[in-house]
Structure formats: structure tokens, C-alpha cells
Length: 428
Image (cartoon, rainbow, N blue to C red; front, side, top):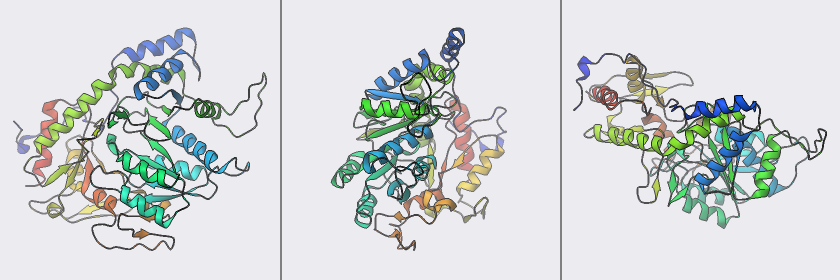
């Protein structure tokens, strides 16, 4: 039973997109670190958390790092070293080589390529899961047959089509860095995301399914890879009594305080996933009859963690909307709406939504990079963009018509009903 939008008042307490949910166990392990004076990047919390995460993800080794971005960087660096050998001191391990990357993702996924002096080529999105399109990836290898590294992100906690992506990569001898920052706890054919690539990366950022306020983890079944990443993350110190350095290192190790928070969160990961799934299903039921759909997933082969619930407006129900680099405008139209209008309404009532990730090939910093679609068109080596209809640029279409809904697991069913009715009112 939904409320009447005409009588809605702004929420007294803000409804967040996805905020941290604490349970009390986190404080216990933080206090333990204080009592034992392990206020550093070593300690029992880090050791125990690595064991807990490795066991949950089904991998042999997990290395605790300062953030998910650090994990992505070191995974990319490790892949580059394996593929191309040790670089010169003033070069990254990719040193001009191209890397295929998910197009619709947060920029941390692809910035690691720039950190290592590589060149990202963006692979368009497919509609079934909003993740990297296998057919576009296949076309990309036809255009760039020498590429040996693919970075795949699982968008909003929904696993991509990893069997197809893996098969294509195997055909071309390419390694996979798996960005599972948003999808910790999600499974594909019963396997945890983060275990599906050659190198796995997860995040414990403040808005993730569980959090330490920051923090990340590198996942692997290789002891040598785990040891390498752990060494790099602690400034590449050699095993000597003094500070001996033979290669570039980074200050990327997780704090024992942060590890205590995540350690306390681990017991609640499955609970958070169940809460997020209930939110997704409640939205799906509440939007019945509207010209919209939810962010999709493969119900046969995958179980998302439902980190964020997203809405896609049918094209015929879109009012006119235009976006610049920093601003957006729309023309109100009876019976129609757009993401800009819905986000404005939510903001007015003290609820937080967000646009879909703007695809990387549309970002000013990466506009000159290659971009490949399922049709084989897009921006090739000439950087000329070819528009040949629906098959081109699926990511841009989802960005135009989609938005992320308030998905906080502390939101009550009554509060969510109010948000649903606010959104329904935008179509009146």
C-alpha cells in the first residue's frame, strides 16, 4: 500500500544512497588494536581479516590494502610485469601497451592502466547485465590482436558474463584483472566474484556492501603473487635488517584499525546482501505498470549482492534532457520524465540518488582512447566515432536513461514506499 505523493513531506532524516551500517562488533576489534597498541599497518586484525576474506571468497590468499584502487593498481602492475617483464625504472609495467577495459564503471577501474603507462581501450556494455559485452570484446581483439590484458568490472554488484569473457581471453592468451569492488559476496555459477579472473580486487570503501571506511583486498590462488603484492604495498622493502630497496614500492598496506572495522563487518555480509536484495525486489514490485525496468542480471547463472538498485526509463517515456560537462537541463512533459527530474525530486524530499556511472569513453580525460562496440564500430585508431544506431554505445544509452536509487539497508519499507510514490508521481 503506497502513500499519496500529494501529501508527502520531506524526510526528517536523510535517506542515503548507501551508507555504512555498523553493528558493534567493529568497535570490539578497533578497541583490541588500541589495547594491544597495534596502531600501524601490521597486527592481528589484518592477519585475521585476510584469512576471513580468503575463506569467504574461496581463494588461497588475500592481501589487505589501503583501498580498492591500490588493489587494482598492484594487480595491473603484476599483470604487466608477467606479460612484458621488468620495466625500466622510469616506466610502468604496461609501457604503452593497450588494455581492454570495462567502459561503464568508476574511473578507479581504468586509472590503474594510466598509472602503469598503458593505454585503455574501452569495451562497450551489454544490456543483459550492464557489464562488458563479450561480443564487443571479441570485435576488439579483431581490431587490436596484440592486446594481452583485460580489466573487467562487475557493475553495481551484478556479475558479468565471465564464462564468455574468459573463453575469449583464453583464445588470445590474455590475462584478466577482475574488479569486484562493487560485487563482494556476489556469485557467478556458484563462484564468488574476485575469484573468476587471474587477479581479483575488492573494496571496503564507505558505501560498499561492508566497509572499513576505506580499505581493499587483493585476491589470488598464487602465493608468489600474494607475496609480491604484499612486498610492493610496504614500500618494496627487501629482507634485510636495514631499509633495502631494489624496486619501486608503495605505501598501500591496510591499517590495523581499518582491518578491525572490516573484521567486525564480515559476520554481517550475508545479512547486508539479503537486505539489499529485499530493497531491489520492493522497488521492482513498486514500479509495476510504469515504463521502467530495474538493472538486470542473469537469474540462471548469477546471484548479485544487489549493492545498488537502479532504474532505467523506457525511451518513449523520456522527456527531453541534455547534459553538459557539469550541468543538466530537461523539459518537463506530462506523462514523461528523465533521470535529472527524478533526482531533483528525490533531493527535494531529502533522499539521495545518483546518475549511472558516466561511461569512460565519454569522460574528457579518456575521450581520445579507443572504444569498441558489439557492431565492431566505435572509435578505432583514427578516433573517429561512427554512429550506426542501437548497436553502438549501449553504455551511453544506459547513462542517458538510468539512475541509481536510494539503496541504503537502513531505509525502512515505509520510507522506500514513499520514494517509490515520489518516482511514480514524476510520470503523472
